[in-house]
Image 1 (tube, rainbow, N blue to C red):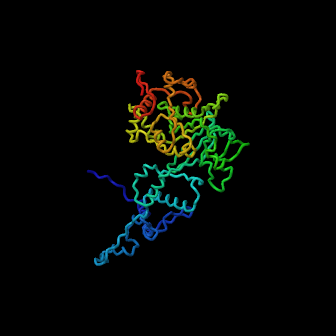
Image 2: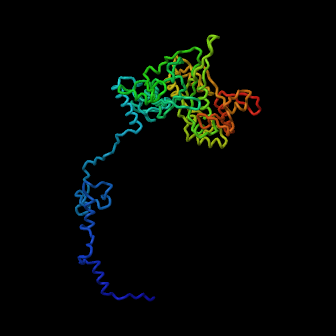
Image 3: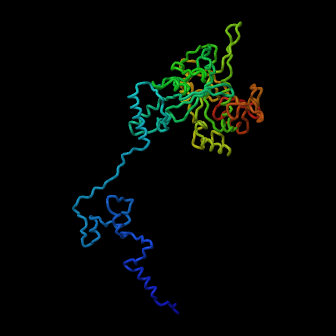
Length: 486
């Protein structure tokens, strides 16, 4: 085998070798740039950076020899000086890191209890006169969940007792014109959750304070004095005013404005109320899977209807007063399971399951709504007084009526809410209202996207049928043969 031949070693090769291995860099002309060699040897720099009090485990110390510039460890690298450890010396104490921090949940609850104790010690006035602070969901949960939660600290048990009493406060009130007439929108905060629940109060007689009308429906917490330094404009801005607010009429209310000081008429029917749960799909999008949007519009319309008071004398004509009542709007989407689970439940319904079974398959209850906040709002409006006038409730749900009566609300009448499509489908059973229309081209103005029109369709019929058969709603259910009625 013939090896390849190489060229002879030339003078140029020798000069290059001297350049690469020479101890001193060759001189360069002054016109050229200076060399950028480091002033210190890299190993010396590494040894300097690898020692000293400024070095931590996140720096260079673990990248270089541990014995460099460490007097206690240098002997270990010279085996002639190595003596080993003393067996008679006591064992070195090992330091253990013990966290003094409690879990975040317990710290938050303890901080909340401390603040409550300081507030109660420094502020002897009642809580109704203090502007509430918005609290997070960790501070106070529902009574049921708090009672079943296990705590190991004494502060947690204090939190349990404080969660038993529910407090609501109306933070703002304003007039809103609706297709059915004027109304007052109230926004509430509470110490149970961080949601902003609403109350739509229909009491247009408040625009005429001098008229002889039933007691006004006003919020006691809104009309209360929140601070000694608050001005009349502060009260008006949050909605604590009387009459109709305008540039020429600006009269702030006083704490006694919410008291039931009106003229009580024996023949005036009790105010009509409805406790309505939020439904984004039915009210905002116009979904026809449910009749929630239709019910909200129908409730506002029915409450706004004028009330005819019969005359006590045959020679006196009957008296007509504006409608009065309220719709408490609770932010509990999807019967309390939330919008996310509600959308997933819709997909299960498309697979053939009904609304109750879909909730159970997602790990929720058939109905997880609560009405304690609604009752507290009604009490604040003066509609749930123990010795006051009762209320008429717009609902088909017997559980809702039972919950209201259990909490001390006097229900004098349950007013059913028949679906508008059923009124059109069975005119012999129920007289349909003139404003109802099931045709899409006959658009009727209303409070929601559905408006005054009727919700209809196969999905709605299946939904209503499930509510009657599985949830016990008190609605007449006409079967396909038109004979059976539940």
